[in-house]
Length: 469
Ligand code: FCB
Image (cartoon, rainbow, N blue to C red; front, side, top):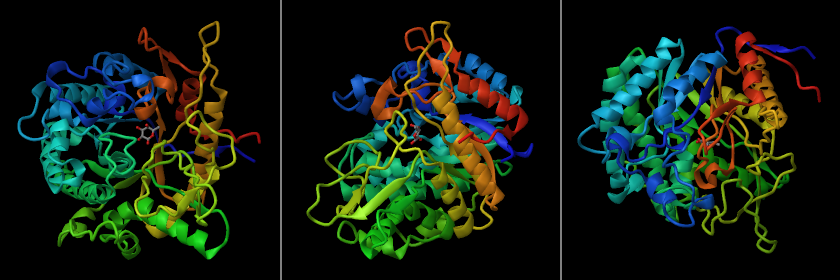
């Protein structure tokens, strides 16, 4: 097999998120977010880790931009912390917070790197949660105000505005299984959150169109590739149901302007969806310049037979409550390895399948890989180097999967590795390392792993060697 060569126009980037890297949780007027509250609640995160300091990026951003420039990347995906720029999530904006992101954006532009800004990567201001959180329609309306504030301040200096990161996680992990902030376990609230996040996307998307017409608009979804354990009709129906909750609950309104009828029927015992008002779905379907896709692993399901021991190996953390609202009779089966340190199975073929499905179902919709990467237990050698071959292998195989989808027609325009730096991995704290650059949390020293050197070479040449096996 020959090497894959990506065109020069293909964008190579890296991604991070505010709460995972910034630290400075109480500095310069930042207000508390649901993740501050959650991580400070005993028992919620591994080792009680919090994002108070994280990778100290709030102070070290010039050095971090230096790394991005040295890697030769064309784009950087970061997120704006809502409580840093608008501490209560309503009312006055915080000048110091806006200035921080303004300097960051200018710093990227000076280095020839496209700023790709996510408006919401999970850090809802605590005051908004106290007022009902994403279960409340008002949060979507406040999000529109927040969007107007940040787009007004940064405008089209930001190349791409991404409204939301993985609303699936915000809604279902935050409000149904409770393994993410705010840690609620209320299935009906989770479905209301799905809708209010979708609505927030539509409202903020329109703000971008009005205030920064030259900027690109996107949203990032963590779409699931769901496969049946057998060819039985019951297992295929389990796939359909999980696909509705995981994928079409977002793709439907965002790209087709309507919730899928089967989703509404499947969940009728939990809610009548009366929180969807006339005109909402049309509003949500704001045309996207690019659809952001995050992919890590695949999902295997079967219909529960009513007697076998239950299996909930969906990779989304342990909880007594399920994130899969109204799908209690679907089992998530463990999959064959190899696995990453998250316990997630490594399945690059599913990545190609996902991109081709999007190409097929939404022809003409440009795609961007906004996250892909792997946590492994990195070993620092005596000479200080980090030979993270398994991460390189993971990246190589997944980028080859993207190339394969492109060869079959999918319009994938770029790839952002998760992550630039080791960081606060939510419920897993600092225990799981996704960075291509290592962070020593005692000293905050950054060290390039071998994967960073490898990725630099790829970004420079666009040439991906084929995996050897
Ligand atoms: C995604 C999140 C990102 C990171 C990776 C590993 O779900 O968007 O913040 O935690 O997983």
